Amino acid sequence: MCGRYVFFDDRNPQLKQWIDQAKEKLPKKQFEEISLFEVFPAQMVLTAVYNPKTKRMQLVPMHWGYPGKEGKPVINARSETADSSYFFKDSHRCIIPASGYYEWSKNPKEKYYFTIREQPTLFLGGLCRRETDGLHMVILTEAAKVPESLIHDRQPLIFDASKIKDWCMDGDYRLLLQSSVQNRSMSKV
Image: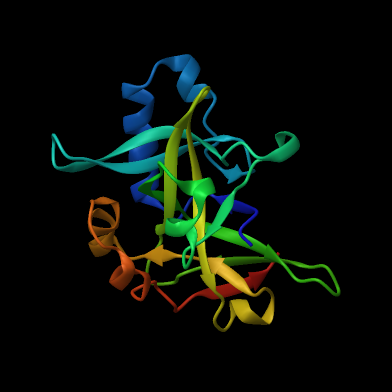
């Protein structure tokens, strides 16, 4: 589930603004390492975290995936069990902004693109932590609902803009798991 996503596309002025802000604030070399369009596992991406000092969300570059066995990154985590998994201990909640994400059907193998019509920016729920080579994140998943369940059994946890700060703040998040946005649309690529 969610093995690739699109950070920025032309219909998303909010993410264009965030890209421009990151370009101004980050060192040139670091900004050039960030994947701004189609994002693959292990690439550097812009991720949003809550800063308790400023009481605001801020964009931070992170690698997509926690280091896994044999060098293969772990890119997703089940939202239902991640908080009790030893593998995800010392993680903090984050938001991964995206324009959409891809999923593949199995037989025949076809690529589909998922978006939300009323919400040009998808706010994917995630976890992040510091590793020896910097910050890393994973995308949280939940049981798939229609239309995604026609393609795959899992889908990313997605929040609307009003919930992203709540997701990233400390405290019990279980009620937020039930507020994942469901009205997704898909198109064959």
